[in-house]
Length: 317
Image 1 (cartoon, one colour):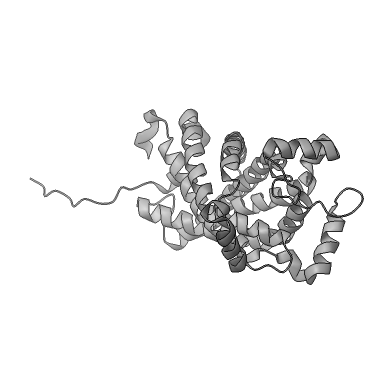
Image 2 (cartoon, rainbow, N blue to C red):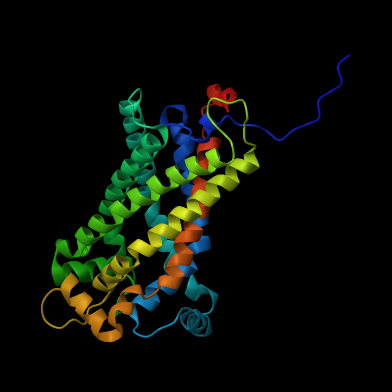
């Protein structure tokens, strides 16, 4: 009798580290995605609160803002707005996840068999998917962001909507939409493209290839995906912080005098208050948020996809 082979860690083919849309159970994908991404958002919400406070208040520093929130409002203060945000974001997450996977699947199918190098093809598909997904998300999420942390007292999100519409009409709910779409959508494309490229390069540097029998373990796969996500998140935060600062000020401030707030007015105010460094207000928390978000989001996202593979296709993973 042959001696029993020692137990080894579960193995996955390198090609299966990116599970496509056709292999997913769509109901499980959306349900598990909504739950796990809500948990992830809760863990990162405090850094977003600190970042927003820093961008709105002149001359503030991250730790001082965090300490002030804890002293004045306690733990609930750093989670202010999370309940409304979590409930309201579920439909948006479903739209974002669906548009991301569908558009990526379409690009991959249309570029299959071409002479484009595989790393470039995967990066292109992920980049376009990130762009499309963010555009879809903007339509849903921008109205949720407008005015919520503003300087005018409001009794809740519905009161915010009423006051914004009374003051500026329905158009006011989409204040900052153009700036958000023009900046965050390319940034999303950069993030997803960078993630795909970074993951491809890391796998190759470790000696893994699609046409070899060498297969990574689950732990190796999570580590590589987390590292690629951290790299993509860090790159994105460096590029997008100035625009995010202008957008945040444009959406939540209401003391610009006569006329509607504008990108030019907001930029001039930031320059007057802090000079060019004013555009990088909140960079520390944003860098931390984007890096942590990139790592936890992609690990969570890839876990969601593995848990959502159709039962009849489990044998392929």
